[in-house]
Length: 321
View 1: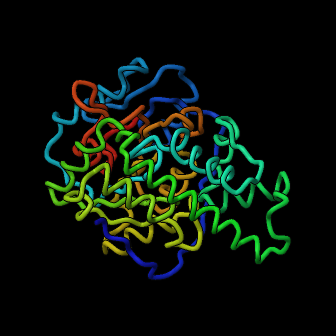
View 2: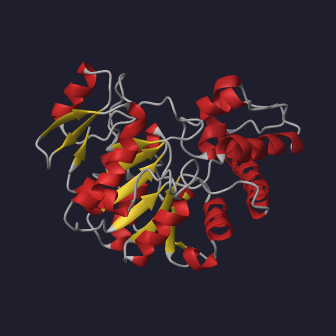
């Protein structure tokens, strides 16, 4: 089974600022680039080793950046690859978590249904218990819910426990596949001694089920899990990523994070880590201006978008666009 790491202590809260403009296929590390992306409508890649700017069509950026990594001298690998779970390992939200929430609401006869669009908005709130609490506070608590705040905390916790059971049953049936490239990148990292962890706001049991059932027990034994209430403040707070770095005994700046959401990006950047976005069904239109790289997915050959060497060069700021 995957290793679950206990909380050694709380970390400070920080939020990365959101900005209104972005490019959907951009690798970026310098202030100069930020000005360039506002000026030009096409994606740009700064080829530092060639000494100039080269405009490249949007659909070609990912392939160009990943394939050109072989032109660089050997690089120091990241100390750790840290993956978000939902939307990164598996696109679980729409047909996984949302369905399990709705089945729970039906079982408890709460008269609540989260449709696809509503759930997309609720995903801006990190954590399932926090998501339900915010929703009920906004629209009103169900008639069957307790009246006191203390009792409502227990009520939400019981709903979330049942939702997790339903979700785990779905995962065990392997009805939701891993996203393209996940196995390849994890295997490459583990083979080369790079530490791998999954850092998620989701319940620890749900994350462990995804790692164990979909990645297999052999990989799961080598992957640490930081999830759920292991930290007091969830994404966009950087606590969970700082916890991972602290547990591994490595500098945050030596880590590369793979995320799919704006709140996950904010957490990673506030922790001082490089962050690659692999857009998911619910997050494609979010603001990723602070991302170090943006792709549709990790990808497998012949549609591989990036690899471990790309992550290494990203740490050295050799790729911007």
